[in-house]
Length: 228
Image 1: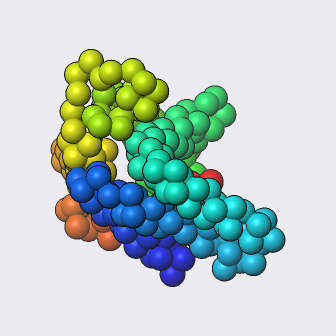
Image 2: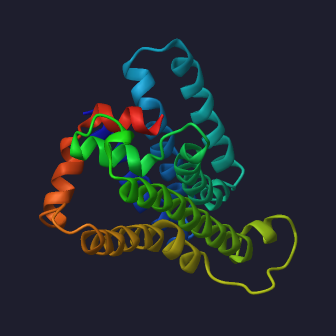
Image 3: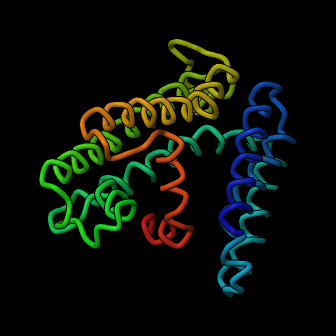
């Protein structure tokens, strides 16, 4: 239930952030910041963690301060970069020696293999390589988002520092990539990789929808533990 609420808040943030960029509207930017804050604090608030009750009003006060100063849209330029880098780190950190790669863990869960050692050696190698590929793709996306945020005009990161943009693009063009097309790239990579995996390991999956059902069947606890 909490994951669903966080997902809805995340979708609300994305919509508000894009509209704020299209219409250059500080009120919509403030709404996006509030949705983002709510997405992160809803779980600790519902769990009645004392720190959450201290941090939440401070974060909201900070968002209002940015709005009051006319800079509510500025953090939105960096949110997609930080978010995607954070996901890339989740993949990359599992490539350390002695750790089980993230995709390997997912395949173990889907196939109920017990542990990674039970998987075929070629599947272990493939899932490790795929984990690295996801980290690289996500870092590339974050780099693209940061580059576009720097050169956006008006009120891009460079212009906010008083440096003219060398190749100005509109805020709407930046947002189209950072808040919408980014996720299309993720979805496209996911679909293309599945098609390749199905050919590489025939008979392992019935189809794409069946694969999605297996992922969903792992349950929220599995995903929460996986992403920590």
